Image 1 (cartoon, rainbow, N blue to C red):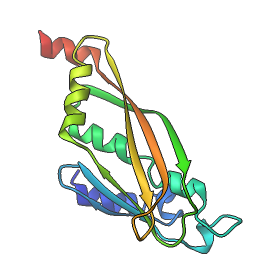
Image 2: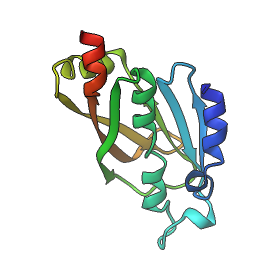
Image 3: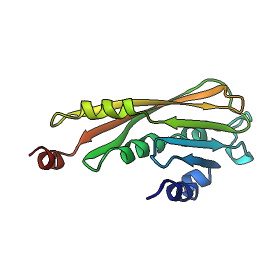
Length: 156
């Protein structure tokens, strides 16, 4: 599936759509994703700033999708854990920019070379307000491994 097709489809996906989350950009190589969340009456909390669950949701699927799209089908990629640190109240439009590096992919490949090896890799992303001040930091940890049957076919 092309990046732009995925972007359009995900923008209609109910968990993102009904939270007010918009994917603004997915690069053709799936190594860059830009997401934003505009403040609306339905995504504010009791004290008038962005609801923490919406901030968390705007970061949820992207690291896993980006890594999956940049590794071949011989890998299994799962979300293992996630944390969010709220740094200051989020107001107005907030955004997050995900960037997957070649070094991260090389590290994953190196750490999953041996049969049965798994890689737990953490990826942080800052959620920033319109002046680029961080309002939250989300860290996703992925569980990545090579599928046993493909390793045997590829390795001989």
